[in-house]
Image (tube, rainbow, N blue to C red):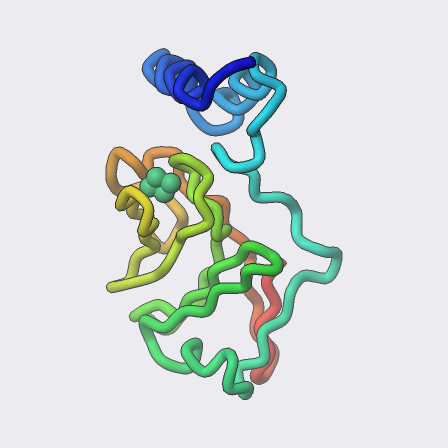
Length: 148
Ligand code: FES
């Protein structure tokens, strides 16, 4: 039985080899066959037809103000309204160590766990964010946003 410390040492070693994202997860999960639900990019596909957010509801009021964002923990999505007036959506799951702690602030996505930062296109902007974030398409029809 591997201890958590042994698993983390193995993960650190694989990262030092330059493996990131899917390749890292393929190797890491293949080696351990356990504990792969909280590490790496595990953002899955969204339901067919996408997820809708009604801007007229109180729950989504933050999306009516530039810089505001909403977290959908059911579908692991963060939707934000950028400072230039566009809607962007990314996975809630950080590519650094898989924590579901992505937030939005000052026109960028930010992970509260270890400080990874990502621009509005999901591209990492510091070392912890180097794996980037999975992004989704956002379309708007009236007050309804659809993330797919
Ligand atoms: S899990 Fe997000 S920065 Fe480490």
